Length: 89
Image (tube, rainbow, N blue to C red):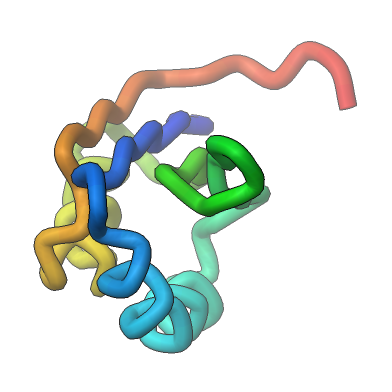
């Protein structure tokens, strides 16, 4: 099953994102469940993330999101995880 992990950064935390980016990308590679991902932008600056993961269930997708180094660094103001169906692309 596919799940969309939608994360919004805390205002003023761009440096936290930049400092943690390498660990976040390594986590994506190591876990092997990310199908697509990228940052949200506001005025050209990263301000959140959209990550599509493939997991057995919602609990697995939520566990992936909780283990993200960005989450551990306290980057996010909010995180939502919801089942998602790919239709186009």
